[in-house]
Amino acid sequence: MIVLLLWPICAIVAIPVAMLALECLVGACARTRREPVRGAPPFTVLMPAHDEALGIDDAVRAVLAQLRAQDRLIVIADNCTDDTAAIAEGLGATVVVRSDPERRGKSYALEHGRSALAGNPGAVAIIVDADCSPGPGALQRLAATAAKHHVIVQGAYLLVPPPDAGVIVRISCFAFLVKNRVRQLALRRLAGAALLQGSGMAFPASVFKRLDWNPTSLVEDLDMGLNLLIGGHGVVFDDAAQFSSRASAQGGTAGQRRRWEHGMLQSMAAYVPRLIAAGCAGRPRLLVLALDLMVPPTVLLILIASAVTALAITLAGLSAPVLMLLAADLLLLAGLFAAWMVHGRTILPLRSIGGIPRYMIWKLPILAQFLTDRQQKWVRTEREP
Image (cartoon, rainbow, N blue to C red; front, side, top):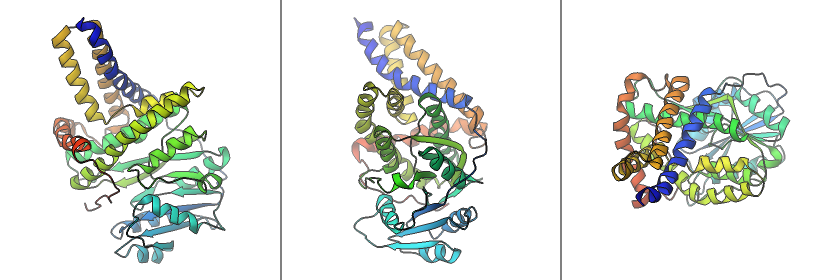
């Protein structure tokens, strides 16, 4: 009787564990597409910025270095109380200023920026955060792919830890890499699709002018991408178009993770049923995306899997459902190790791996706050080193 009861419990836990393991293994085996992309049409880069005076100069310079005469950069200085607008304008960017203290956040800023494109939108709109720098050729690569295939393109957006970063920041950056690169590579192979991740996103102008930003969402880019996929638009990942942000200090990292993970848990509840329904209606690739979205934050998943595995062994020994769950657990360990070996050793050196238990303890309050003190609105991530 106990074994029969354990089957559904172990299966419910094993599904997201096995999905994350599969994504890590597939993503670790995937190769970066380096073939050249030519013929980029005119494009406009939109850069929403709120009090970014300390670091926006690097992002603006990096973008301007890749623009041609027919391209442009528009910085949306959103409710700034510092010199963000003056710095960006002094470097040569076009700046539009938005002042509306009651309505703050990236969605509002981009909506304001979209109105600034009226009359001269270019063929493609590219969104780059004010703390994010494009890698060589990234902007033209995104624009060319978006225009040629009439799809939304997400570049590889990663966090770079400073040389003196502590173990928690480094492990957090590795988790970000697994989410934003390894799992995106897997989704490209398994579903021919991608999730939007906030920066390094390119939209054909005809799509961009109809976007519906959700200002109440903590992860408005993820939600918008899911809406586009459900609506039949193509969203693809180009890992050769790289974008990077300097990781925040530990305090800023905590706030950043809190917003992302609370937002992702909310999106899971809202979109998994819709993706399953659309997938069952004849679009099977959306079922793969539903499985991806069912994977909770990695620390939470590991804690749940460990607890259920230990309890199941205590109750039923090495019975069939327990062996199934154990196999998924071991597969996940293998997948994370493969992802680290292929993609993560620079970000997370071997000496830092011993800090994983400390990182998991650090994450527990962030996860618990989803139930006790859930984040409800956008808060700017601290940029201080």
